[in-house]
Figure 1 (cartoon, one colour):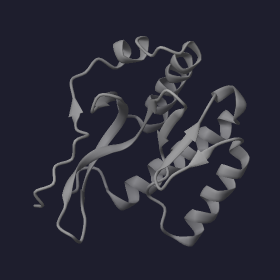
Figure 2 (figure 1 turned 90 degrees about the horizontal axis):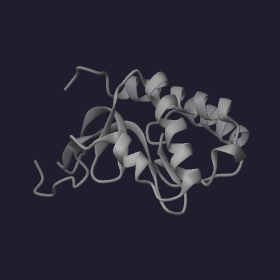
Figure 3 (figure 1 turned 90 degrees about the vertical axis):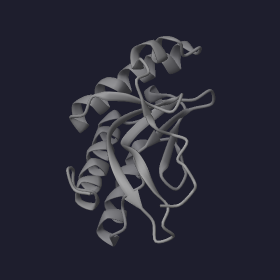
Figure 4 (figure 1 turned 180 degrees about the horizontal axis):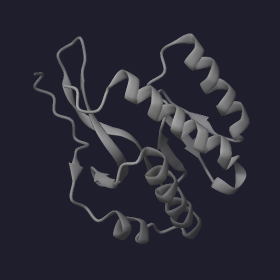
Amino acid sequence: MSNAQNKTVENDGDVNAFIDNVAHDGRREDAKTLLEMFTRITGHPPKMWGGSIIGFGSYHYKYKTGREGDMCRSGFSPRKQNMSLYVLGCTSEAKDKAKQTDLLERLGPHKRGVSCLYITQLKKIDLDALEELIAFDKEAMDEKYPEGAS
């Protein structure tokens, strides 16, 4: 295993207390909505990862470089400027990319990173498209990293 350690690890932090302490009222309410949505769609209980990510499920990754670790299968973080949703990291097939692109076009205003989706307010997006995107990411994760497999 590589000497580099993943700083974002699952811990026993209180998810509801974390959400209750989100300073921005709108972001706090959006976090409560996302908590319900991710819990229902993923079937996993919410867990704190690091100090600011609410994750659902976990998987073990190992890169060709030898670096390996554990991370949440999906999740979100109510950041100061936006909501960061970790739902874009597991699509490699062309058909998957096309479906993901379609869902993102339906979603509404957002920005994206490699594996993150950034949303400023849930009221500005299509929540049905978001639910489909979370479910789509779960299916892709389940295929690439089957639960219970090492």
